[in-house]
Length: 210
Image 1 (cartoon, one colour):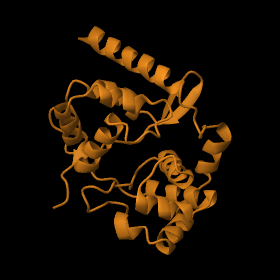
Image 2 (cartoon, rainbow, N blue to C red; image 1 turned 120 degrees about the vertical axis):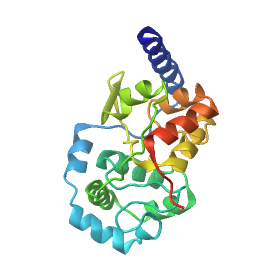
Image 3 (cartoon, helix red, strand yellow; image 1 turned 90 degrees about the vertical axis):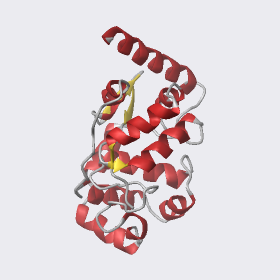
Image 4 (cartoon, rainbow, N blue to C red; image 1 turned 180 degrees about the vertical axis):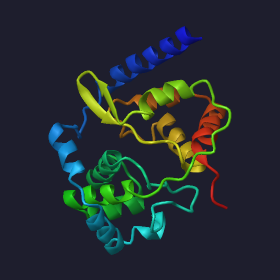
């Protein structure tokens, strides 16, 4: 079984590397970028969140009560900064978030990321783990993922809205979302059945809001 999992992980990395070669990145993590994100001020971020009415969708504490809107409380600041940047430059698209991110400068994004990282994250429901969880955890339990001397930041999955997780995996699977630097999420989800995606969302997610 361990051999099968190792082989599966190897196939995922190999496939994602091949696809990524045809899709040059617009974003590259550097030591300077990590230092910038680490300099974020949560108090300033709270003020920016209020000014930009982030609570309209994400609530005051970043815990969404809409099953299709992500909870950003307790998420890694590096990941939040990367997603805001992607929305800002058009590498990731969603009408409301694109419009909101276009109004932000880099410092705004850094401070917002610091603020939401400090908020308390909901607990995951857990339960029986699908076999593929070990492959998912190999990246998502770590902040920094390296491949071919390039760096990507993986988000925390635990405690995310269940429906949002399912929708996100489906978006990667259908190539409707493509802002994963190594194209790894597209490669991984392409190999998952719809049932496995549901099981993963149920395992990592919270009980969705009514």
